[in-house]
Length: 181
Image (cartoon, rainbow, N blue to C red; front, top):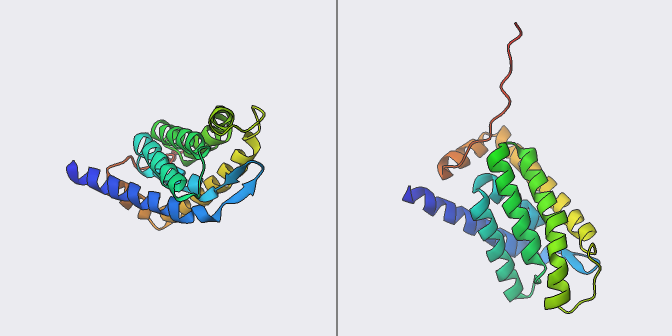
């Protein structure tokens, strides 16, 4: 059990490092920075590590990015809510599309709405309630598609099940074929 926790922490640290290093590839859209790689990392964490690790990983990544000046306070609600919902959706739905939908809805809608009070009260910016929905949706859809393509490649090469078995997480189940009777 302890060995799996160490493996999960190491994998989370790898994803945090990837999220921080790739944060220099931000695309400015409106008042926010679109960072598709963060959303791709969120989906990977949600699928491989589950909701608690993925949300924690998103928080630490956002914190490091903020300290380095490559992120803003708006990264916290978007990435954390998206990562949490992605992990929960995959945990209970056991399908990749569930993880994708959890990340997109969590970041693009709920995270964007949660960014409004952060922008207004903490950053002192004037913004409409739905000002961050479109930029957050653009970013999260792009990043989530990247992660789905990457995970599909991992599935084809049978690496995904090896990683999930090593981490002790649930292996994604494919639909069982029904025999014709």
